[in-house]
Image (cartoon, rainbow, N blue to C red; front, side, top):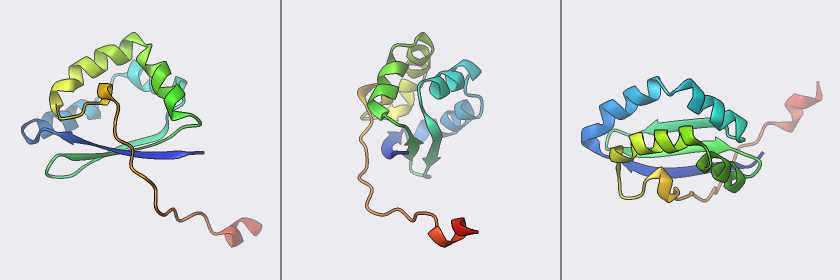
Length: 111
């Protein structure tokens, strides 16, 4: 499955609240992400506000378009936009280029 990584910048003065919001992501938002093809979605936050996201999807553009069409996503993104500096998720997020991936050891699968 294709893997994608992106980065955004959370405003340092809003980081604590940003983390709190993600401890209680709306169940309907989580269901929408799953239904539109987001898999193994993770967010990582550095102490200076650098946010790294990782997601797997068969077709990220299609998954993003499907999310954009949902009211729950519109409401979630509107509530989260003030947390970001520069680019926000609704602007699209800058994808990082994968330069290395350690795949599973093929010898472990032969037993």
